[in-house]
Amino acid sequence: MEPGQPGGSGPAEPGPLPRGVRGAGPKASASPPSGAEAQLQRCAPAVAAVLPAGGRGERMGVPTPKQFCPILERPLISYTLQALERVCWIKDIVVAVTGENMDAMKDLIQRYQHKRISLVEAGVTRHRSIFNGLKALAEGQRDAQLSRPEVVIIHDAVRPFVEEDILLKVVTAAKEHGAAGAVRPLVSTVISPDADGCLDHSLERARHRASEMPQAFLFDVIYEAYQQCSDYDLEFGTECLQLALKYCHIKAKLVEGSPDLWKVTYKRDLYAAESIIKERISEQIHIVMDTKEDEEHIGHHFEEMLKNELNHVKVTSGSLCHPGRDLQQIILEQCYNFICVNVKTSEFEETQKLLDVLTESNISILYPVVVISVHFLDHKSVPIGQKMENLMQIREFAKEVKKRNILLCGLLIYCPQEKQKLQDSLRRGAIIIATLIKERNSGLIGQLLVA
Ligand SMILES: Nc1ccn([C@@H]2O[C@H](COP(=O)(O)OP(=O)(O)OP(=O)(O)O)[C@@H](O)[C@H]2O)c(=O)n1
Ligand SMILES: O=C(CO)[C@H](O)[C@H](O)COP(=O)(O)O
Image (cartoon, rainbow, N blue to C red; front, side, top):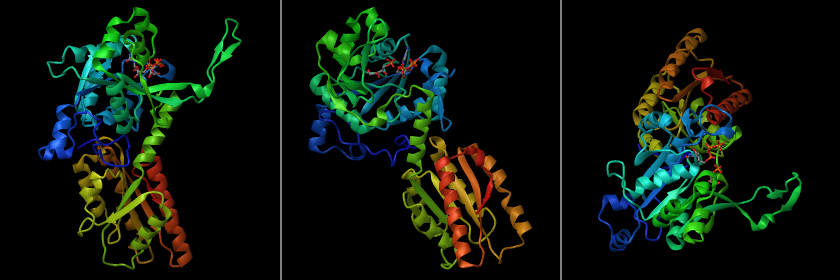
């Protein structure tokens, strides 16, 4: 499966090529390149990325280094790798990891099927870790799989929301200026204290910027800078752009980045990152119904209700047994939320079919997929005791599919004959569904909620 953006709104589409950047979009790989593309590819620089991931995350205050802290049960660094590897014109991604985390990193690469990754040993400071990554590229290490790139991107492993757009901008600017980096307006004013802890002076906020990542450099420039720089720089420096200026006289081009480029540093940043990811993977819901025949059935009113109530998300619908919108296509679009509306039976036949398709697709490797099996309780239903007995099987199904990162819940909608009361039940059902999808709470799996 091709990884997409971190919780992104769509599949990993290759973007435009930076002027002179070698790329291999679907067109380039499927058919011979056109004249212009071929020329572009010939004069294009090779681009690699170095990700320092050897820190201890002391400010986070937890024993696990923050790059390995789980977000929706997947380590933070995996989201960053996913964001970089979806950019097809980045040829190699070199990650600097400490010896003690090397095996964990290798497992992670295998488990989440990351591609184009090489590992190097981290250094005791961030600059030393980056330098180790650059050396591996310069020397074409890793069994000659790596080659010296023309442009190198440096990006912190703990900034998971980096988009292709900003990578393209910094690489293009680096090609022209020698170095480039993403910046943001300052949130707070920067002040200098004197030796007594009193205000010495403050900086004019509008004239300064916060330096973020990604940054990009002509490889020869940054490698030279790291070779030249002092032990003091390697020990206490925090700014790669400064090294390029100090040792190679290259004035980096500063590029405005998005607010999502912030660095996960404190515990609250993990919660913020989780919220962003949850929001992004909740943008689409697909409804599957076990019949399309009985147009008057309550199931169709419920589908309408969902479409009205969840109007901030894209709601699509289809059936597993009738030709309609192809489920495979929906999965390719990276939909992570499915509602199975069971009209015909009180069994899980249709839900089971849906779970089989989802399991086979591997879509849940990267994000937890929510499946809600909806059932109706009306005056025509089989005796309630029997119905409940059937529905309680959901516990077993849920336990089984949780192993595949699928979160299955049941929803029983009570259907009184009075129209207004029925509408209220359906609306409550829609609200429960919206909450289950938004929260993605694995504590609720296997529960049968009643609306
Ligand atoms: N010796 C180090 C120190 C830091 N980093 C990496 O540099 C990035 C940014 O550094 P920072 O946020 O300071 O990370 P930590 O050093 O882990 O955090 P802290 O300062 O809170 O300990 C992180 O991806 C971190 O893993 C690294 O590769 N090698
Ligand atoms: O801020 C930065 C811009 O250059 C770097 O991204 C880096 O994260 C700084 O690391 P540290 O928090 O260890 O100083």
